[in-house]
Image 1: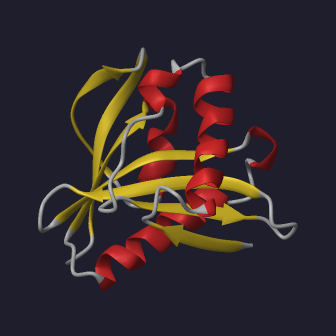
Image 2: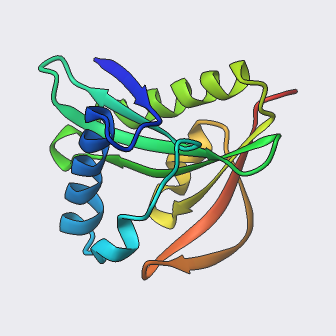
Length: 146
């Protein structure tokens, strides 16, 4: 397993991230492409996890929300690759990178079906549930500093 990152929308890593997102969010969950495939800038870092056969199997991205907070989005694992800890490995790498860059907090909008996954990683739910792309979500935060 290998995790690669890029902030370049023209990179192969970005193309691989889009491929995983299309498979999960558009094909599997039925989210409209115009809602899923938004514009990004070089402030957004895309993470792709490749399995031992170098197939892109999981992805996530994070974007600065403030000087102290990064927003994690688009966490997805191809259906056939679930249950191997790939998404957890991605999130842990993102936590380490965020700490190294001096950020204090991660925030994300978790689909309610994934709340327990994020709780196991130390995220805490905040506020009331909300709808996004027709799916119920919860805001969650993770403190990078003690």
